[in-house]
Length: 461
Ligand code: ARG
Image (cartoon, rainbow, N blue to C red; front, side, top):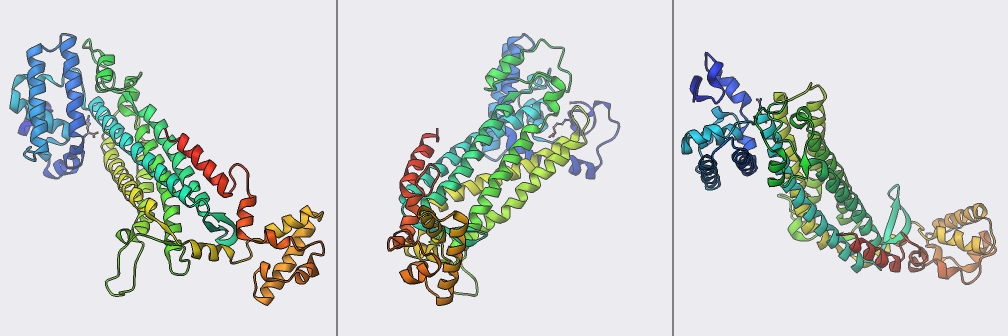
């Protein structure tokens, strides 16, 4: 090791790094989580160097044994992380040389930290994406099961948060599942652009060694190599795309959680959340608060923040690598940690929601939600829709005045505004009749909800 204070790049420096600068530029305290992927990348790179004759078989063996040793040290908590070595890459490389001597100094041949870090983040994010895909799928499966169980449960449907028309709880749950299906598609799609190898781009222009980029790409299970070396080291679109996916996912969960908070409140009383997903108050003994739902709603902001941070990080950067890029990791990791924690609790909490069927039915009946049914009935008797709308409006006003439901009016009272109504009008004024009538693809009728569950299940894979 040459130069000041043992820096791997110290050769041309005459004085040590300022202490504040050392702290300012160090990233090892957060990028150390890339260690396993960094080691995997280094093994692939050194094995390739041996194959093309740049390293000897003995050297590559020493490097691999040393890296295994380092991985064990990191995992058992005895690795001597050193902020003076800046980042995870130089911590591992410097330690490798301490462990295996000169062979360690050859690891970085034909490579730069610029292609190394781009490779590490892609490998790390790919593993995380795969775990999230599994988690999303299990949540969707659980929502489909719950929707099937609640396919007949009459539930209030809202527009403007005013009672609109009755739906079934299963239908509402499948709308949530549809959001997550789109999120899954976005995640699977960004994985394709993520899963490409920057390794071999070196600092920016490639390298004069006879490297085999296809070999390292295949070893690391990348789909292909990134064509342009300048692009390979500077592209962070994949991180932005991930945060974009994560922001939309969180927006969906935030909406779902907003509904849970309302539905679980005593005023709505439509659902019970399991105790294990709620917390109490330190002063009010009666309280059972939906904190998990509220925290999820709250955490949405920090994920949007990560997306904004990354977009802003990239917007002013000329090609190729700039140190700015070190700032990509904390927002990306925070977004990752947040969505994986949220998916974890959602997988537990959402399938455990208990629908209070009687309360749901009572709420669905409030606010004259069968008014559209009455209008459609009059249309079937030959009344033009606009006239029917007017007649039913008057009928609703009468019911409001008498403080009764539409079905509690007498036939005479209904006929006073809608002369074509007959005794069979009461058949359409039931909640069950209203939902069963929406019997087409995408409609809320229980048999349609069951069919939709089947379709949703079929597209899980
Ligand atoms: N820690 C750096 C990062 O995350 C690694 C690459 C540094 N490259 C350089 N030329 N200084 O971006």
